[in-house]
Image (cartoon, rainbow, N blue to C red; front, side, top):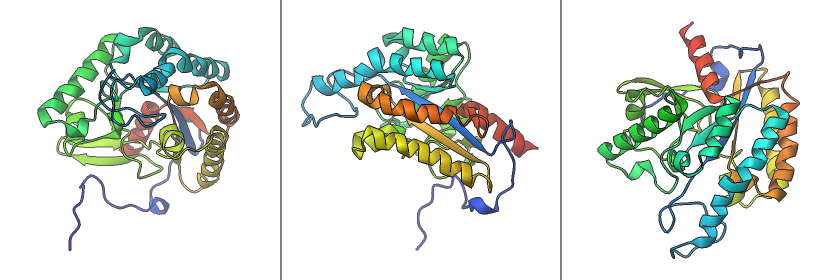
Length: 293
């Protein structure tokens, strides 16, 4: 029996690939991905603190998520500034209309903006090819109008893709995607429009699966980040690697969780001389340049 294949990449053992280093001569690249999300009131998808039973309007969970945009993100921003940490903001384009002050703050820092759909109240995997094309075009145009340049990277809302997504992203000018979590190195995805780079994005060093789904305590999540960085530093003597940290302000921006996250961020900051602290766009650029060479 022949299993159905996605056809995007072939199997490749990480122990038998070509070698290279990151721009500062280190072997581990690390980045922080901060998800900035806005949700529809009274319907659609959204992470839940408590089960809603399918009843709308879901005041509790909607307001809990909105805490991240009103309070949590500003607390986290203060830590990023204090530790001089670069960040990639993964942005629902509705954020620009809802809380433009947030985007102004990250724009002032020079952080990278990554497309993340219109809102995490919807999945792009449910859309027709025409609807998905319109979604990508709308998000790209909104970001470009505010940032004076289109985004180079994309993370699907709810990390959802249709069978057409890589082709549509490549045709729209995107250079990399964060949806796939199959590797610790960037990987080329084959599309009908040319190659699209997959940059590793974490699904376990990610506060949604860890805290919202698996109910892992804040202190343990901070230890997971620290252990991931330390172990990948050791592993990177054999191969160059990428370590991402995925965060949501309505989760780790809560005061009792932020106190633990601070410890992990300080640990990351203390590793600057041993790793390349960067953003996914720069990681994609460097990998592509090495590949071309």
